[in-house]
Length: 242
Image (cartoon, rainbow, N blue to C red; front, side, top):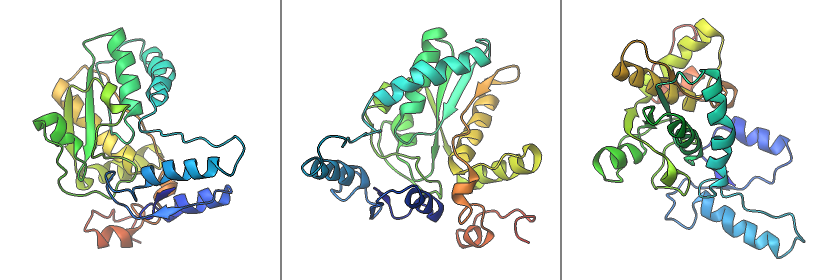
């Protein structure tokens, strides 16, 4: 089950892998038609006609999500940096990544800064900055941004927060393709922009880590498509518009 606004590449890949894809309108969580709530009802219905093998993973509120990052991703980051890490930041969808990694890093060194990188259109920036769950603006990013505190996010030791616009984030992944050969997606763009913000705040000599969590192949029809970018009044690299 997924929102119908997701990229065509994602839909095509799921169908190629054999999924019975159910597309629903992109509506808030409080709406019974929201994809998360629809998927829960669908799982309940399927259990009545299938003997075993039907689960509702519930990645947003099932805290096994963040625990997976606590036991794997967090230790990997700690070991890769020899414990010399000063800050970690990423965006939030389910909240599992920032909660699990944040908890692990804080257990190793309480002085490590854990920061939220939030796209416009999400309510989390205002929640952490002003105590108000209020969304402002919009973003072409997919799978990140949130309008509620999920079961995983409730465990995240977030200390500071950044609101990142598409105009700030997208040029970074265009540069990363040209200079590093990395073809990345919109969530990675938000994460890199947040890491730069955190690095500027902490100053020279500090080590900042983020997650490059999505491939640009999933968004060839959107953020790697000059026609789409122009329709959204977003920056278009000259080399892409040829």
